[in-house]
Image 1 (cartoon, helix red, strand yellow):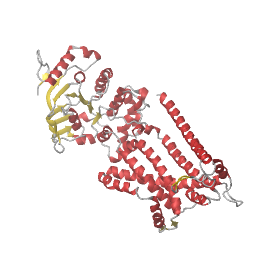
Image 2 (cartoon, chains in turn red, green):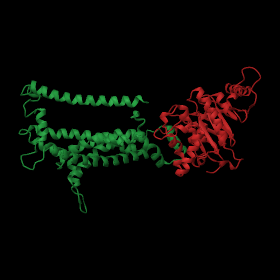
Image 3 (cartoon, one colour):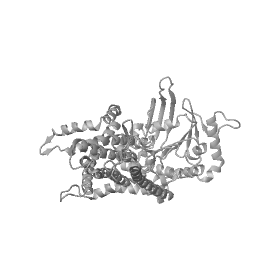
Image 4 (tube, rainbow over the protein chains, first blue to last red):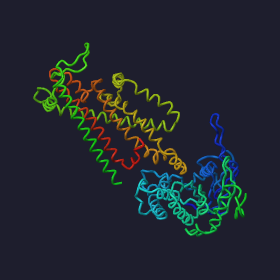
Length: 277
Length: 298
C-alpha cells in the first residue's frame, strides 16, 4: 500500500470551474446541478458540503468519485484526473445506504475491495481484523448485514471504505438514515477514525451541527443553479469530545453556518469566522 | 429471529397437510362419482359431458394400486408394473436432467449476452419469446430427423438425445429470463460501489451480479425443471423413444380396454417424477441459503 500524501503540497481534491448540467428530455429544460464551482481540499482536511436539496452537493461528491463526469471544468484528485484516482483506488466511499452485500458476512463485506484487488488472503484477514477493531464490531465479525442495526451497518461500510488505507474518504450523507443518538455517537467515532488514519474527508450532509462538529471547513452551497455560497472556517481543535457540543465555540460555528445557509444574518453581530470567497 | 423458522416449519407442515388432503379429496371424488354417476355417463344433445363410470373407463383406485404390483404381462420373467414404471421414470429423469443442464447453460449464456449487450437484449428477447410459441409436437419430428443426419466418428445420434434437446428447448426460456432479471437486480448503490472499486464487467459479474441473481435463478430453475420433465414426456411420446416413461404411457394405454387399471401407473409415475425433480431443485436451493436472504423480491 503506497502512502499517497508523501508529497504534501498536492491537494487532496482540486475542483476548478466545474459545471454539471443534466440535459432535459423532450420539452423539459436541462437542470444545472453545479455552476462554475471551484474548491480546494488539502490533504488530511475534513470538509463538509452542506446546503438544501438540489444544491449539487451530492453531484459534486460524485464528480470527485468519478461516478459522474463534469460538463465543463476540471476535477483532480491528488494531482490526477478523477478517473485515474478512481482506478488507482485513491479514495474510499460511503453512501447514505450502507450498501453491504447481503450474502457476505461483516468480515467478507469489509474484505470485498481487498479481494477484488487481489490482496493475498493472509494480508486480507489481518487488515480486516484491524478494521473491525477500529469500528468496534469485533463481536459481529461473522454476522450478516440483516442481523445488524443501521448504525452498525454504516460502521461496516466505513470500515470497508478504509480497507485500502485511502488518503481521501468520500461520504455522502452516511448518517442520514440514523437516529439522532446513534448519529452523534457515529460522528464522535468518525472524528477518532479520521485522527487515526489522517485521511482527507469530503462529507455531504443536511445537518448543520453535524457539519460543524466534524469539519475543519464547511462549504455552504445554494441551489438552482448549484453554487458555493460561502466557506465557513471552523476551528474547534483536534480533540473533539462530546462536551464540545455544549461549548460556545461550537454554537458560534452552528450560527455561522446557519446564517451562511439562510443568507443575510437575521439580527446581531453577523457571522464570525466566516471566510467569504 | 427465533419466531421465523418456527412459523416457516408450521407453514410447511400446513402446506404438506393441505396437499395430502387435496389428493385424498381427489380420490374420494373419483370413487363417489363412480359409485353415483350413470354407467353411460352424461350426455347433452350427443355431447359427452361427464365420463362413463364403467370399470373400463374408470377403474377403482384399489384396482389401479393392485395392478401396479402385478407383473407387466403374462410372461414368466415379467417385472411388476411399478418396477417397470420406476425404471422408465429414472430413464426419463436422466434425460430431463441432461436437458435441464443444457437448458441452464444455454439460458444463462443468453442472459449474459443480453446483459453485456443492450442491443442483444432487444434483438434476442423477441426471438426467445417467439421460440416458445412453436408447438412442441411440431418440433419433435424435425429434431429427430436433423439428429438422424449427425454422425461424428462413432457417435451416432440416438432418439433419447433428441428428447434431451427438446427438453432443453423448453427449459432454457424461463432460465434465460430469470437469470437476466437476476443479473440486472443489484441496486444502483451496489453497481456504483463496484464502479468505485474500478471493478470491470467480469469481476462485477462474479462478485455482485451472479450472487445477486440466485434468488431469481432458483425459481427459474424450478420452472425450467418442470418444463424439462413435460418436454421429456411429450417428446418421448411423439418421437417414440424407448425406455422412458412417455413410451410406457402410450404402451399401457393401448391395452386400455382389456387392462384399464394398468394405464394409471405410468401417469402416477410421471407425477411422482415431476415432484422428485422439484424436490431435487429444492435440495440444491437449500445449499445456497446465504444467497437467498432477500428472496422475497422475486
